[in-house]
Length: 177
View 1 (tube, one colour):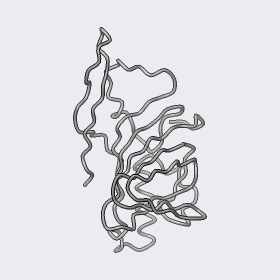
View 2 (tube, rainbow, N blue to C red):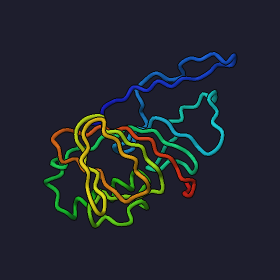
View 3 (cartoon, one colour):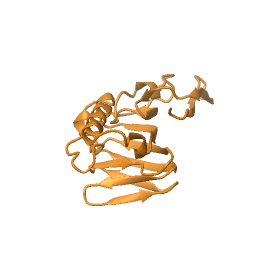
View 4 (cartoon, helix red, strand yellow):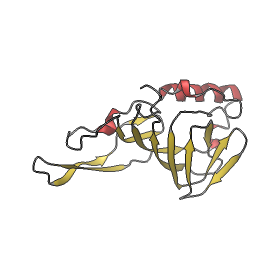
């Protein structure tokens, strides 16, 4: 079960005074992704009263926009009972559930490999995670960060506890939503 994330969203009232618009558990969850906030292309309206975290429906941010999310990756040992074919099928279904099936051009290195035209800022909060790239791998410890620049990659948890991560995805403006 995903860890619940408390989200506090601020706003300005009609007189321009700051206050809290939302203080509660973020509840827009797409598979392992807890969607915290999303912005679109153009000027942002900070007084619209809309929960923009509830608007996210897919792995990518909207064209010209951003996406702020929390995600959890279970240890690979949780899936040891599956055959390689079952793992590939499960990963394909997982990406489809995130409206991201089109982001898997080459899964030959790992079934969770994916690539989007975004710049992603990722921080590992706890646990251990390995960033798998086509030519190499890097293992992260808590508070390590990655600037993911439109490369084919997978997140693989070879540890014993869930890996907890935060990410901001920034659209390069070339993809549709």
